[in-house]
Image 1 (tube, rainbow, N blue to C red):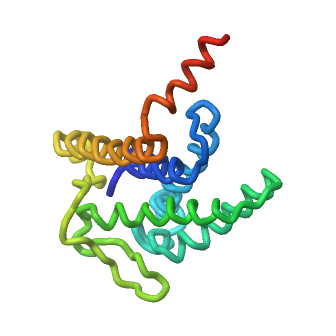
Image 2: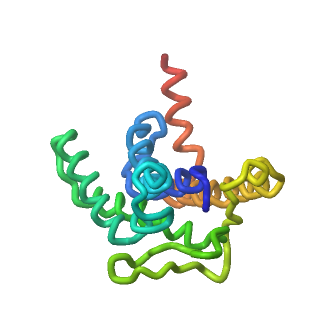
Length: 190
C-alpha cells in the first residue's frame, strides 16, 4: 500500500486543481481538508482490529464509498462554511477515489487476497494492476517495516507523488515561483 505520503501529496495535487488563486499560506485549511479526504479510505486499517468488520482495501477502498463519503464530507464543510459549492463535492470525490486507484497500482503483499475492492457493492472481487507504480510494503512484521525495501518504497513514493504535486502546481500557475512568492512578499511587507 502507498503510505500516507503518496495519498497526501496526490490529494494536495487534486486541491491545487480545485482551488482558484492558489496561495500556500491562505490555503492550509483546504490542503488539510483534501489530505484528510485522500487518507480517509484507510479508516478501515484503523478500525478492523477493533470492529472485526471488513478488511483493509475492502469496502472503504471502493468508488461507491468515495462517492458517499465525499457527499457527507461536503455537507459538513458546506454547513460549517455556510456556503454550498457543488464543485467542491466533485473534487473531494476525486481525492477519495484516487486513494484506491493508488492502492490498485501498488503490489499487495497479502497474496491470499491481493488488490482493492474497487467496485463494491457491485462486485466483491479484489482488483490489482499487473503493473505496479508504487512498491508496496509489508506491514505485518517489524523487520520488514524497518528494512531497505521500505526505505526505497518511501523514497520512490515521495518522488512520484511529489512530482504529481509539482506538475499540478506548475500547470495551474504556470510557475512554481508565484505560489511561494506571494508568501515572500507578505513577509517582506511585515
